[in-house]
Length: 131
Image 1 (spheres, one colour):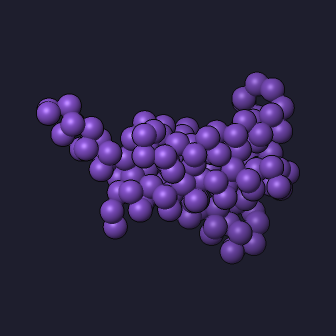
Image 2 (cartoon, rainbow, N blue to C red):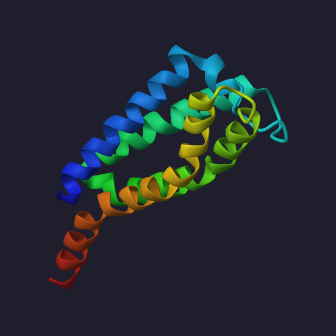
């Protein structure tokens, strides 16, 4: 798949996740690590805004490379919330527990996807810079 198409698909995923943070914030509030300052809702809303901003950046060719890098960092940054979810859900029924555990190794492919999404524009920018 081309990096441009990959970026647009990732933008759709990020936009969907961002909207979900506003449409159903309670499910995200419980994922916020207690060690973070402030209210879980503030972190949920901030995360939703970040996801929407990253989606917009990925959708625009002019900002795609920087946004792809920021998206990869975002995926790495939310990993502690996924660890918390897996820990908190360890006593839930098997399907829920399996979903929580499955999120952990999925962070790496998401990070690699974000990196791939910005590669075409980085190559194009280097070619333009070389003249």
